[in-house]
Amino acid sequence: MQDPLIDRLNTPAVWAADLAACAVAGAVLGAVGPFGSFFNDALPVRLAYWMAVSLLSGLCVGVAVRLVWPRARRRGVAAWTWIPVVALLVSVPLALAARLIAVALWPGIREAVDWVEWYGQTLLVAFVYTSLYVAAHARAKSDAPKAAAGEARILDRLPPRLGRDLLCLQMEDHYVRLHTTAGSVLVLSPLARAIRQVGDLDGLHVHRSWWVARHAVRGVVHDGRNLRLVLSSGLEAPVARARVAALKAAGWLDEGRS
Image (cartoon, rainbow, N blue to C red):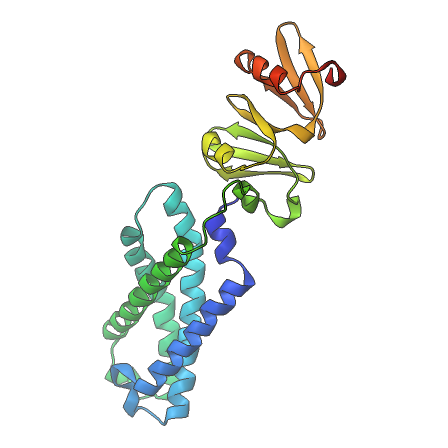
């Protein structure tokens, strides 16, 4: 099953941008020296520490958000309810890793800052970072250019391995299976919304559970009063009796197709 959000977040370009932003944030923190770290060492050491911690935070938060966010969206869970949970969880390994690095650089920190205070500082940073991270990606999604009228936006939900030669849409519970000449994939969507996203692709809604592209039809099977469209992939799509007239008017049931 594909999710357009996770597909977009998992691109190398997005990961690179995320980690680059973390490196910049780490450099700023190294220069500022928060939580008393300004007095711990010279600027180069502070930069190395904070950039390492920031990159590690970016990896942990990035993985956690990519796991949680799509699932939360599918269940209608608001971001403000799961962001604190993610921050609480990722702060545990982050606090441990950051403390190990800090103690290796500045042994006196072991006695100067106890575990509770250290975890609290880590939690604050993780919560702010996770909130900004989700807000930035949500804004990027909302600022994305709208599809032009007639554009087949449904094709953007196909993974590259399946190409873009859409044959049909098949409803499966709360999902829609997109069939191409190279295979199929499940996406979360009502069939009606998926059909709206086919844009100007030449096809018809032939059954309550099926939309078929015209170029995919290779023949018609007559089974008593029932009809099925034979597709180029070998699939057979049922035709609702209420849709027969529309298919005849469109020329799909001509003698040459039977």
